[in-house]
Length: 237
Length: 89
Image 1 (cartoon, rainbow over the protein chains, first blue to last red):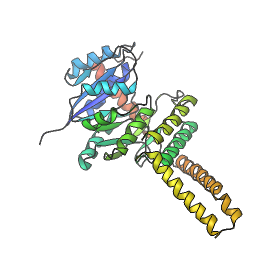
Image 2 (image 1 turned 90 degrees about the horizontal axis):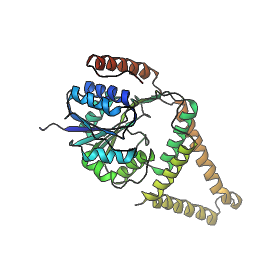
Image 3 (image 1 turned 45 degrees about the vertical axis):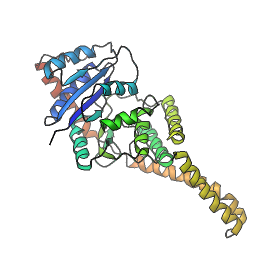
Image 4 (image 1 turned 120 degrees about the horizontal axis):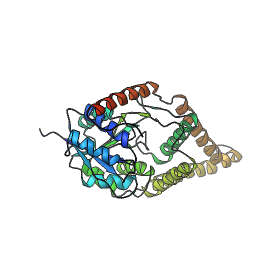
């Protein structure tokens, strides 16, 4: 039985400290698996790439791949870029800011092995999952957005905007090509398109710790973006 | 099938039932005319109810924040010992 290989793609922009912590935690929790970490850095001015090079010396250049880009080009294309360099059978995408804890990686992998799913997506909204660090307003918008999507989009997953996911590489390549949205609507479009294409999607509970109080990512413009994305998906998928 | 077609299909079915009710005059016609309004109000109530329930049972994980702090301390300690520069800012 050949062991599966997992490529973990982490886009970074000014995540100098966090990326080091994430890499340490990934190595701690994935000891018994074959994996590589692909860091797609958009030329962070804070020296993210310097610390990644130090990490490469520590863990090995074949385990940590630095695939930098020359300017800030956005999340969706970062995954495409990382994907080109991925040699795994499976690709995991996660954020560098520690809101996605690497300790959940084994449960993604186990779930995929048990079910043979094409995609395993982390969900904050089931038993065992959860969010920390959100105020009432943030929770309210999150629930409202979720109810709207569940009512009008029937996406088949409970957490649309979460971006901690494991994909079969071929499935990610297939889905990512048909996605046009940017920003975090991108994550939503990925999972909805995959669901419409009939791919087998499973969920695992994850917790989400928002460490940066007060700088909530959901302002008025994000809500408008979300609604536009929702309407687009109702018509386009 | 495009999702919008499914929604339109559902709307067609609902309209057909409504027209049926109007024709058959099972309910008094003044009520029957208002049925779509009731339906929209019902949908709104459902949405508000679901948001309310979601808020009431919003899953939180305060202990995770402490665990994360411990993991961060552990990681920093390890990386420092390996000579990696993890001083913040």
